[in-house]
Length: 344
Length: 57
Image 1: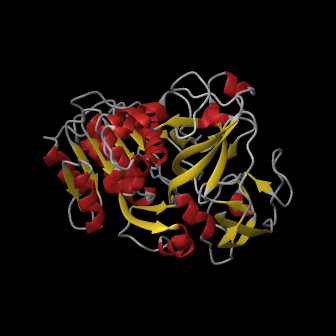
Image 2 (image 1 turned 135 degrees about the vertical axis):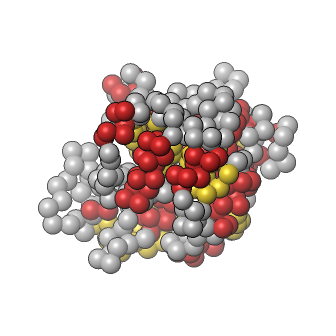
Image 3 (image 1 turned 45 degrees about the horizontal axis):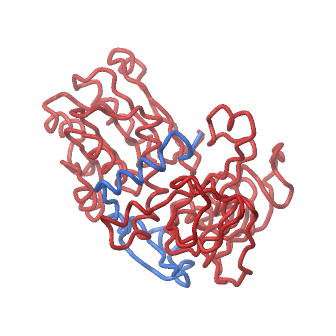
């Protein structure tokens, strides 16, 4: 079958120490410290065989993620951008939907409580948690001690077929009523879930009637826009300098778009919210050294108390935080890492 | 840490989509699997696209 494979040279930087779960030459939790000169190519691989607890999926759609771009993008010294769990060579691709065509003897469908049937349309979690280590058993699957990731450390979905544990599959059947192409929207479930996890789960979400401000109209910022409007945000403001992305933000439900390059961010937030400000500010630009002042000045100059700033985007730069503003306004900053890990 | 698993997130997103939360405007380009390598390069600098969706079958 056709697949898109990424390979790179294992070339640890000086000072790199093999982690306790790393495998020399093969797998590391610190990708950007080790992988050199990545190559992405279309190659043939055999169709995978399934285990009793797995299903074989005929992949219909798979989206490209920023992390896919970053596994292939290098700094001047040739090391990859992507700093997280990686095991190369690997078939990349993890935002996907498809049709089940083969069912293992223990592959249970959550929708029916019985074995999966051929033809079931599904999307799949990217994080492969074991369900048996302490974090998993305590209810924290994202912190699994034996975590693998589809499209990063095990073969992913830029491929005609993929074998996955049935427990990671979620049926798309209920999308059939509203959508002609359930696989197209189905492939957006995974990236939307990343945004949902950041703003609802980690950021605490909002109540109907509250305001939100999002900085950065990339896929996460745009998904968050739609999620917030669905959740009942009264006013959703997007800050984004690129025209094309600003238009998309409006399509996703943003009430106002600020161009921070030629408008005053704080003054516009005050104007659009009657000086109230927002309950939640989502930093999704990856430019904390540029936007932190805008965010904290908006919090300071507006009236809302108990705001949350959620940091979801990549940055090596530090945030220049004015603790005073956060104390007096009872505001907090929360980190919600996506798969691109940003540790200063 | 990161992630999206657990806490009802995946099924809630699917249910929200079924109830009308349409995320498809995010898809700005559709390509075939053969075009993935060149588009990965494109996205290193492109500022116009949001989500590129690969039609595999």
